[in-house]
Image (tube, rainbow, N blue to C red; front, top):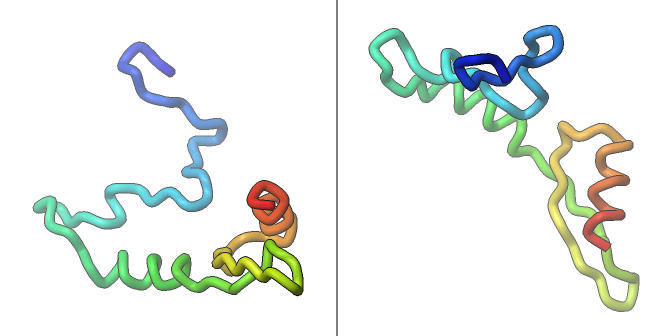
Length: 79
């Protein structure tokens, strides 16, 4: 953090999954539904994954935007 309390990111890039406020509000601070809807729709796509067994299935939804490695980590965490 700097002296103003702002977090400094390496390379000044926004982490995956976070949205810059400038992308969702116009210059009059009004919510821009169309841009957010398109981005939210991309992240809203999910696939069902069974974290239970074949005898006792426990289905969870995991985002399709996750990498295979991220999916494995989430499944292991939830089991």
